Image (cartoon, rainbow, N blue to C red):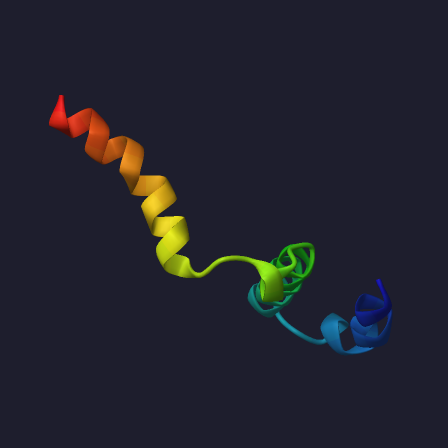
Length: 60
């Protein structure tokens, strides 16, 4: 909310496309801040967790 308050005057001058991109990037940053990324496992663990059930299904 603080970022929006400080950027409000500058956002009024921008086109809708720029406003949309600003809010999307702000939302993505907010969502990533909810995760404890420093203590989470690496991307290989995520890929393995996602594709292992698919591989088991294809083996049947």
